[in-house]
Amino acid sequence: MMDQNSNLHVKARRPSVHVQNLSPVYLRGKRIFDILASAAGLIILAIPFLIIGLIIKLDDPKGGVFYSQIRLGKDGKEFRMWKFRSMVANADQMVDKLMEQNEIEGAMFKIKDDPRITHIGAFIRKYSIDELPQLFNILNGDMSLVGPRPPLPREVADYTEYDKQRLAVIPGATGLWQVSGRSDVGFDEMVDLDIEYINTASWWNDIKILFRTVYIVIRSNGAY
Image (cartoon, rainbow, N blue to C red; front, side, top):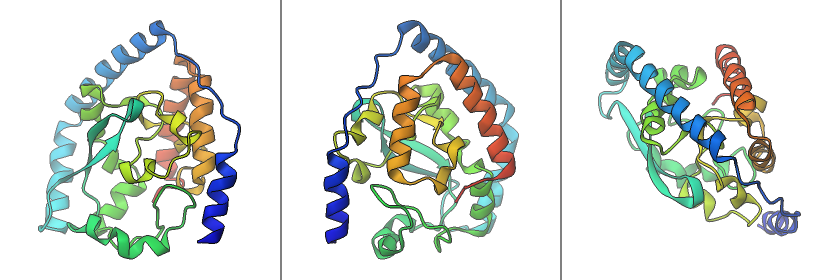
């Protein structure tokens, strides 16, 4: 406990990087692209969604096809984020018992061999298929295709002022963190990458991240 408090104290003294105000033209164009891309994706993936849902129910009939969580978006605004369910039905109630097995330092929870993951869940998580329902969030405007990952409220409760800067923009389904190692990157590094993304944001950088995401998903690097 002493070491954890010490780490938080050191991190609190990190120099604050004031994120830039993004161009209205860039933000407007980004939103239009998000709407068109997410709508097209939902139409194209309608049948695969049905097949995936059926397999999830056959694998674990007790739970639903979709799983939702309250996440925090731009400026800490709450929204409900959707995924295909990849864990057992009571996964959220098991977090406290598994917290001591957390493999990532900082305000984030990840276990490589998470016992809550179902058989089909391991597959769809490996290839990020479980993230596809976030197209609904993108179409609704809660999320963007590219941006910092939206955190849980309990995670943000442990944020320093430095960490909170990653909430300055609309969160994304993918981002610089995901294409830089995903679960292999620690919390502090994730925050730094998110701030770097915000301060270098451009259409060209978003396109590069999207292409790198496709490559990462195909190789299934760092996903768990």
